[in-house]
Length: 347
Image (cartoon, rainbow, N blue to C red; front, top):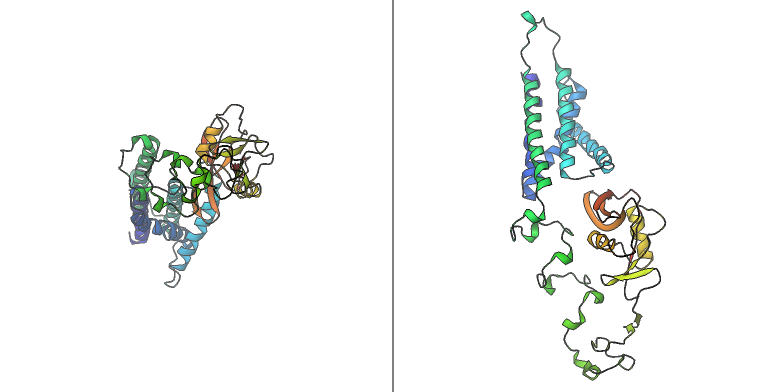
């Protein structure tokens, strides 16, 4: 029936784009299928459900669906940000597919012609669009269910060594302690990304102008030999005191606050508070390791880390959190959590 032809095309395109955007490994190809799924199909289905049997003017056939799709994205992002699972590719796809299916069903019902006499014995042939809705729903559930199963079963231990190139990894997804020594050369490091407290002094060569500091028992007489590795009693580095202040404990080359901050803040406010104290929020894996140290108890309800796990749009993102037992989870940036700061050893 021609009255439902556009809706059948919408359902077919939804099934193809939904499956391809989840299962296609290449980001550029995945984006080709994600664009119509986000910017065209939801708005067209919603607009069709609103207008019913009426036909859209040719000048409005693109602006109206595009505006409706943008409204779905804005409201859907707000909804998913407060859902337990957070915002990620699978949750977006499920939400958009659900909206398209429901809107297409409503549009089809509104386009139905007036009731006709029922055939004998009350038998009624199935509507073509109803069959298309059922087939599309079954195909999407099967594809998405396979994706969920794979996501639950496949982890880092199941991936073959050297099977993933570096450009396939998300930024900040691999912590430094998981890298093989010497795997990243100095030419690949960003300027300022490595500080002095992260450098093993025993790996540095002798400073040409500090030969006279080889046997220095203290650095008091070696003001021009700031890099003298044999000055074991040096209490200052380049004029700055080296050590941890009260209320902090040395761990992983820095000074960690023993107690969490009293106020529970959202993620941006927590990061600003640590910056004002001369430090920063810890990364999730280090915070989980610190929670296992003697006498350390993380706050109930999880604590913030500085690792961003999901970024869906500007200022809509989630960060990793760590529970008192060291379990890593995530929470939207607008939620409130307690936190502790990591202060540089040299201050």
